[in-house]
Image (cartoon, rainbow, N blue to C red; front, side):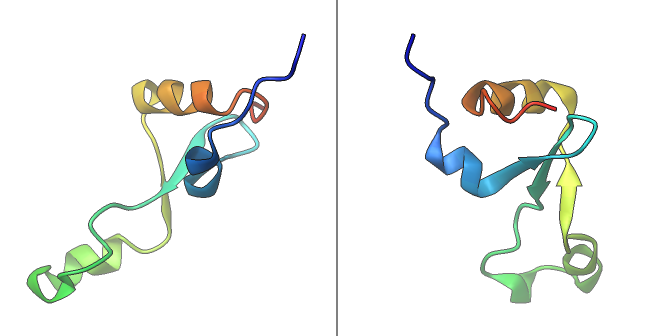
Length: 67
């Protein structure tokens, strides 16, 4: 059987933690930041762990990245 391909968009945007959870960058941080409150911009730094339903979708795109 041939290997399954990883979605190239998913491998650029998501990565898995050691326990198998999916990490992603926080949304709404690209442009129009002058409209956003300072508190929102501060809390959107770094990455966040996706909830289980979203993580299940992403892990289907990345078949060999499960922990």
